[in-house]
Image (cartoon, rainbow, N blue to C red; front, side, top):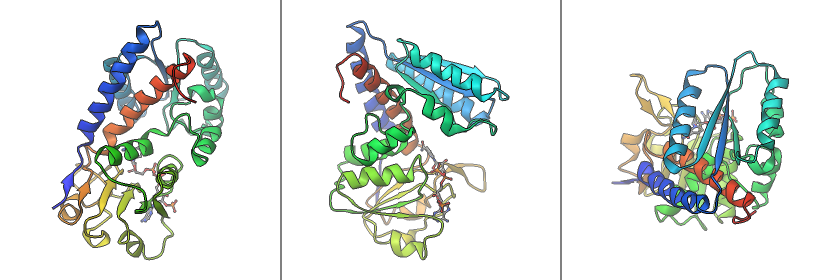
Length: 286
Ligand code: NDP
């Protein structure tokens, strides 16, 4: 029977570490600050933004939500980013995605100063991840690496299979596992005979957005299974991309949904905001 990785507890551990470092930074007169830009009234985005603001508050990080109407034009959005780029009290800027359809997300993200791009979605930060020089790592995949390491999972030399190749989860996660010396395979919707690949995984990470898609027969005995997906099942209950109940007896470790990767994403955002403030203050690494 596999053991459940408690993402909530690990995230709480990180948040309390961040809180301590924030207090140290405050004692030398610097309060880390995060600005979140929210355009439109997407219900899920409203909840995510509220959770991020609450987490900042608990960690002692100043946060501010800049709310813009759904029909905001791109120029106004870019000007908003520009103003935040210039503010000394704001160390991290995050644009809540998705943006309204008429806005070019890439253009807006590229406008964020690289030192404040705490989501690490800009081309420069993506390139830095490729070469192992990331000032910030994207929050969800970085959260997965933390979960593995804090659960005592050795990545080096292991067969790591990532299912999903999005720019925000699958691809950067594959790069991070590679930089930790895993042997990495990336699968996607065009992969033939997916189970042949997933069954070889010592570490299987799934980010596809399909409820309970990964069944027990697709998982190797004793594998470590990381489920990034957030979906609703046929009863409207939140579930992951992995058939948790059936995979649990087969694997050695598994993340639940909810309570696995999800809480880590916010914890890593706090960590990146702290790092941005430390870098500006000359006490962090770049
Ligand atoms: P995207 O929709 O951007 O990407 C999905 C990926 O899955 C694509 O690469 C796609 O392949 C692949 N895929 C889809 N169907 C299959 C299939 N049948 N077999 C193999 N691969 C498939 O999703 P995201 O990466 O943004 O998100 C994935 C999931 O993770 C979602 O449920 C999302 O809600 C969740 N998520 C959770 C976060 C958290 O904090 N826990 C944060 C971000 C996302 P192709 O490229 O060929 O189309």
